[in-house]
Image: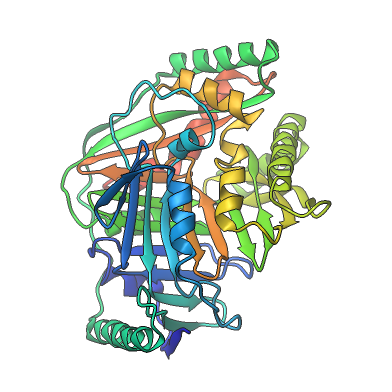
Length: 461
């Protein structure tokens, strides 16, 4: 059962302003809306909160040891849900992030030398109360599953109470202007200089020439100190203005905040139909229409960028085949151009049919982390990433999104993402290194990708 109440459509961003300072409030935002990416979701006040660090799992502050993926899988089984397929696809379930360093639970990998931010490896809430928006049809609904109650009458009562609670909060909200952002203190710092990043690219190329790998994704990490600990949704709104993205998100896990404008869909499941859209290949946007078109044509003609993309497509096909029906995995789009506010990308689409004995958690663990942010072969690439980058990636290059209680899933790759802990902020930008990579160009590509994040921190915006 699920209680559904249609409400008057309104701007999801404006509505979320009134919830953004609530701990564990989440906004999944199709800020760059299309027919394919037309839904946004707000989740508040989860009935269960799961976090983990190095295998120490906290479930509503009760701590145990183990694999957080398995714990999550077992918990999700307790809350089955049949949704109305005529409405938006998420009507209750889990929302949050899966950090890159969860790869430690999937493969035997070296630990990063430095973990100064100490982000949780995973932060997931179980949401029985969700607002869903269909941005194309201009419709909106409040959904309540009544969980965690298991008795039907108790669930129905809780669903009614929770729906009324949320409707009252929506009704009592007054229009609020975009929130302000106080800025940062001092300069943005990087863990690499131009010379040291170029040397790191050179070291990666040596591994490629030695036959260890074909490709590896290396990143540099930027950091800054916030001038005030405040409601950070104002910063999200600035980033949304500078760099609207199809898989944008704001996660308030105070004192951890995630602010994302990701262009990349990692995994989607709809009734066992699986889709992934790896990005590999980047050019900056031009300052004039003529230059912009020239960059786009250069990217489409680039044998190097196309080869990078095809390598990752092959990796994703192999990963999906671990949990999909035989002969169901195939490529529907290869190296197509997609353009965003600061960069052009090459994007491919791979689809498959999830086996009947596999669920979304099985799919996630089979493919995580995404090949576009590791390299190929994946395990050796991740070992080299740990050696060269040295810092724990945290939320960066993990995943953000939802898994419904009906087992449908939509998660992004956490790139173009600010991760905040207390008064410190970090963000990373990287690129694929292959045998013929040019270290100077690769360094510039990281700056191109970081441009929108740096720009949104400019107080003169």
